[in-house]
Image 1 (cartoon, helix red, strand yellow):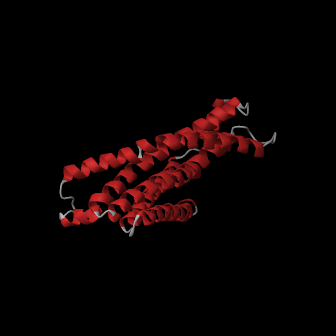
Image 2: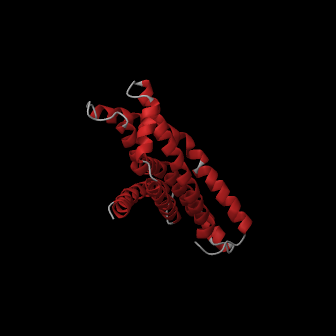
Image 3: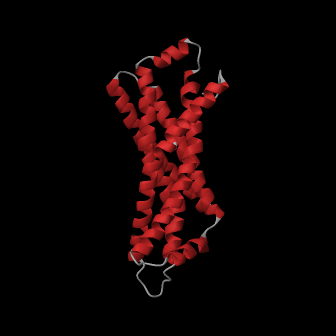
Length: 231
């Protein structure tokens, strides 16, 4: 897959096309989920911290740290595993069962590099960008919910978020984003590339891609948290 492409211009064009499909095509669902998850997390955190001895700005601290460390990278990538992963597996699997991949190989084209590498590179670029976008919307959703429900004013929420923010926390979030992006794109491409049969098998390949991507995401979520936060 990682051999030098035969035509670099075609490789760049395919990568840009995949970046549009993975990134721009996923913006609406990421935005909706992030805003509502941030709002719900704020309301539930406020419910659990009803005490006159706990400063109300702690809610902003908890929501922002939870968003950076877990909610934005993990929940967003689980959703993308269903949307992006199934799409990639179905696309490549359909090319396999209709013998389009065989035609590429007959023409002397490295089919795995032509189909897989642009998707993986596009995922490694766009999914971390989506995670940054999700982080912003999660915290924005929390601020909006806190203000609309009368839990706390926005300035106290922001103050609580600033008190404990560190770039290390952001680096953990971005590490998860890159690892999860690699998992989603590589597992989905693999399942589609080795699909065999007909339309039923293509559907099964899409299901396997989503299931295995989610399992790997949760597994590596634990590994990264253990290595970076409890080293």
